[in-house]
Image: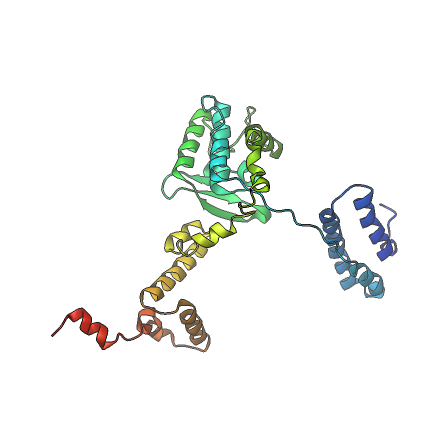
Length: 300
């Protein structure tokens, strides 16, 4: 590697390398495409700073990606998940830790790295119950915590007597659980329910994903309460305002999409700030017919 020069990075050499990792090292096409993407990022940087060899670099960028078959997403039914969560022996400290970890992952949908990095001062176990997760790129998000999860975390803290800055999920040496440790815990309790992972292969009536369920829930779930599931406070407030406008439009027989498009157009075109109240949804309600009014008042 120390003797490698930029002149060695030719399109032929890169193509041979990609073929090598797939054929000789048994890497999948998706891994090959990841290596190609990394090389493309480096070559794009070279192209911006070394125009004298631009032809060499453009030939490398012209190497196509390889089509990879997308694997169908699998998931567990709620009954299967609850069966796995109930498996740990909650009479022992380790069993209660495993139970709380499984429940926490199911509640928050957190990445393993996010769950193992949670400290006690990241938790707010009284209303509004929530947890602060730190993801990739030092990005933070707040997620709601069920009462059941909060009670389990309360009990877990009482077992260990941990401080605010200590990790929630630790091993017997008081060190945070590793990814391998979490994988072992999951496999220990999930192997007996492996058929739940493959149920969709045997029954063609089962969806490969939950999109159909989500589409059925979406018209019912539109309310300001959805703002509680936003990652940041500002996003939750914006969603609450938007949900209020949409529901107000529906109550006044106003098309929400047409109303929002019209209001945004007026604002962009310089609608005066002191006349914003004239854009409220109930002012767009269609006039009620005299016949309807007469029916409500009754016969004269």
